[in-house]
Length: 186
Image (cartoon, rainbow, N blue to C red; front, side, top):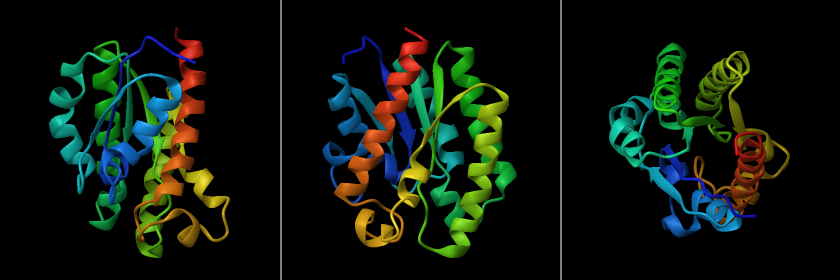
């Protein structure tokens, strides 16, 4: 299935495709499956605040039809308050909407570290609630990773980043969400 759409994915190392090259990222794999180029604006180590700082240049200047926003893992590792991350996600969504760009919120995958995962869970709750309240599309990467009882071995290269199999699972989830979103907004 091919769409005449331009999509940007903004995020951190999990969007980038770390510890691999971008050609193994979920972003690239999803674009390949959909027959389009999704612009990968994942930056290793970025927090949601840093994503906000580069949003105009990395997203708005590209004039995309859609933007996938996924952040929070590095914020959780740095113990950033949930309210700050929520405000950052809201800012990016609202900025996209002001420019006629359809936002999709990516729910970050689980983190192996329990304390960081607890914080990341608070962020996900806020993201889900905000998306539901504002009728925004969500790409639920999180739930797909929970389905495996052996997820650390099966889907992870380390405690935070997916392995090649994990990125393929993320790509499958992104493809389904993008197909659904694009069929609603042709």
